[in-house]
Image 1: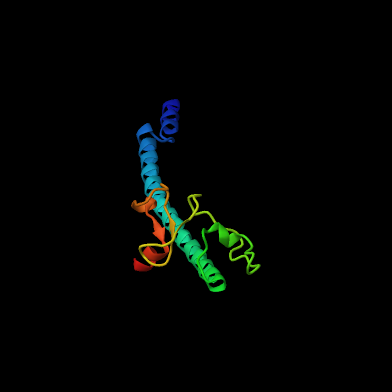
Image 2 (image 1 turned 90 degrees about the vertical axis):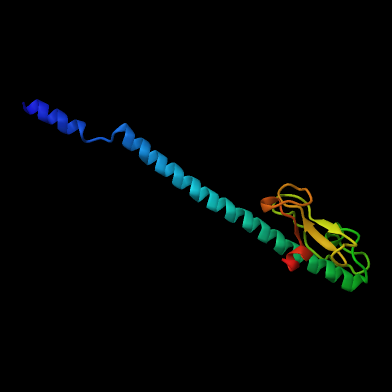
Length: 141
C-alpha cells in the first residue's frame, strides 16, 4: 500500500505535456509582440539618423557655397580638399543607414538642391522602411 501512494505522489510532481505546450505558446506570442515593437523602433531610428546625416550634409553644402560662390558638382567634392579654399567641408561622407550613398539633386524641384536617402529599398518612393528622406521633404512633414 505504501508503494502505491509513493508512486502517485512522484507522478504528480512534473508538468503535463498540455501545460508545457501552453507555456511555450504564451512565450511565442509574447516574443512576437516584443519583436514587432522593437523592429518598429529600429526603422524609426534609422530614419532619424538619415535625417540627421542629411542636415549635416546640407550644412556642408551651404558652407561650400559660402566659400566658393556656387554649389558643389557632387557630394564627394565636400570630402576632398578644395584647391581654391584649401578646405575640406566634411571629414567623411557618410552612407545612409541602409549602406547606400546619399543622392544630391541640383537643381531640385523643391529648392536649390536636394539631398536624398532612398530608404531601405534604394528606389525612389515607398512607404515605411522604404520611405525616401530628404532635406526638403523632412522640412515639409
